[in-house]
Length: 184
Image (cartoon, rainbow, N blue to C red; front, top):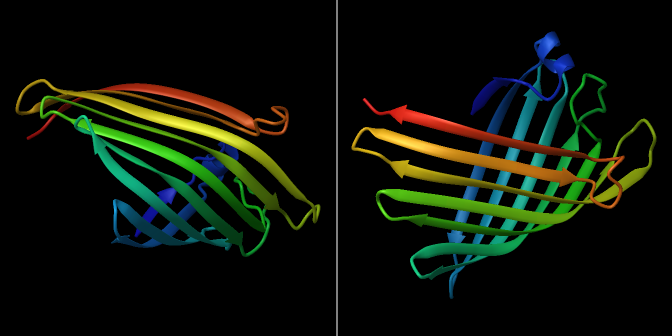
């Protein structure tokens, strides 16, 4: 369970739009490195809107040269109770399919993870009653160094292009960060 301020836009921050989210997830190992993951999210917004999200992700896991890889498709369905104009993405119905690749390595002193995904999403809102569909691509990565028993340094980067087939309709983002942590 999570309660947080919605930081989707300046409007949601200024209005103090909050959300409370409950998440239920399940993961099952099958055979030959196959896994099945499922998630259900229910979110209530302070503007009296709500959403339900269901995600299913079968994946294939393999360890090569000490690096854990996972690859698979991801299917997601989102529905909102109503289409609001409060500054956050809330289509009446949205569904999408993606292909993803994750890589993870940890030597004890150094570690990294790398995630990329690409796919197609379709959304429909109640205002226009039309569906729009776009391709998207996104990725993120973390490189970490355990300097000592209590010190940790991390470099992160993430980005994406949502609406690759027509950039005017979508948006692109890129963020980077550097963090030094001291563990007590």
